[in-house]
Image (cartoon, rainbow, N blue to C red; front, side, top):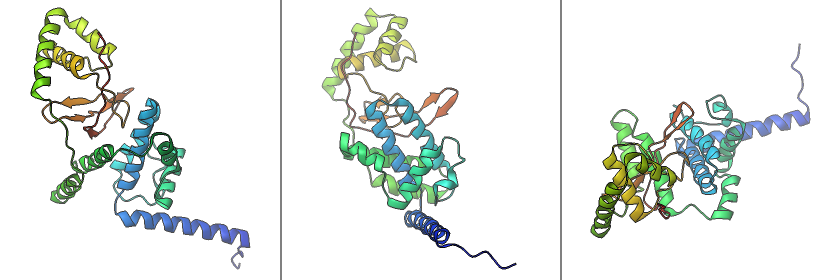
Length: 261
């Protein structure tokens, strides 16, 4: 039986599909990695964090994790549609990124908040390279090192004057508050409440002098940790119900808000 002849409309539709698939494949091949996809969803996490949409940030964080863990270069959204955390809307965004190299949603956010600051771009770049460094072998380590060097982070370490003020505040706070009161104080300021009394005192003292540390601007769910020696903030990730959601955010340009006693 001879093959059925394709109609003009059917033929045009199939040709369009082939062109779209070819375009997506070419876009993926040109980068040789899934970094552009990861960066796109990390940017969405950043903007959703600016808007205070924690659950949207959590959802995008799941997509980022899935993309990081994917073993090969992604050529289409359909390829990853069954991965945990990757829903229909994310599949469409992946296809949009692959075919156009940008996201309309990010452009809308830029119209409201402006472009992502250079400091945050460096942080997002460092995030991607940190994820790569978990790979095995010398090649993976070399690739990670090269990527990290292209976007160095420079924080502002605590000055001697700030350290002196923190030390003075710590002495006053340690004398005035008990452990349960310190935890209540930290909780009311949205800070981490775990650790021994000395850690709680230091955290409250730093907060009273330098201000409250905000939630992670990328994943929205993690609580940033500050390293006074380097001036760098890092996100350790967070628990979403019973599932741990990793986050590799590193940044220096973090705005703190007033501490409340």
